[in-house]
Length: 380
Image 1 (spheres, rainbow, N blue to C red):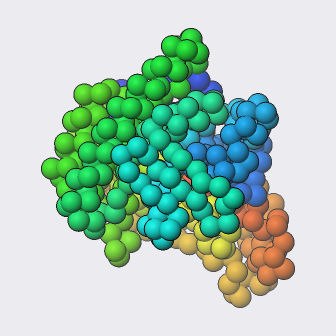
Image 2 (image 1 turned 30 degrees about the vertical axis):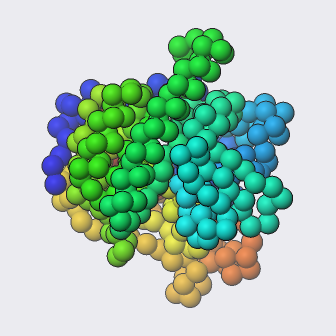
């Protein structure tokens, strides 16, 4: 696996946004509906979280765009004053329709969907998703794309790439129209990212990336399902997609968040990550730990740097030790594994908060170590 030279990576080591600066690499938890489950904004700050990801598909349904505006936008509503990235909602709408065609349709105009239990239909067009994200006061607006699985047919992949490129152009036009209308100063301008599709086809990935670069965006994302049927990272196509985008542009590994996969993608040159896995694992008692105070993540020298603690295991009934001796989170500095297991068994919400705090602090410690070892000038 090729590795990005330190000097080149350090040259582009951060990204300035309207609500703050991101220092690479950055992991962002999913605050899908405007909240990282079980945590408030202060908890996120104490965990050294730099930014969060919220989702247009979900937010437009609950609490609804008019409610978000009435509450002052996503930052004020959630009391989070750091950067917020809003996903376009395309992946979620695609997943819904793939689950059952009765839930919606997807064509060149956009995506029409009606989730089970919803009272009305919703419509996402390239223009609509940009309008919503900018009304939410997002720091990074992501273009609507036609998502596919890597195993989809060539015909499906080609149609998705064609549609993704056309939608990206429409997103850029609407974005520029709104910028002119709002007359935003440069420091308040949200960035616009486009998503590179193409499944497992190198030729289609190249075609999509070339067209998106021609249109021009502030950053780019790896689009599509990033894992194979065995749950392993699609390393070759993910690395190739990064190589298609010039290094001066940040690259978001959308939906990639397993700690080992983040390490692999940082080596490829990806800077931005988001995933629901760490917080979901926490709620199911799967906690991440380092095997040393300063794990060596450089060149894969320390292959056993990551282990899991299953906090619901009977062997921890009387354990008075913390989840990790190498973690400074609230959970590890104040509570024992035995108490944590007790909270899980009685289904107390304190377990969800403490476990989530721990896994998120692990993720920010991981990115800190990667920053030290892969970038010339660490922050934090």
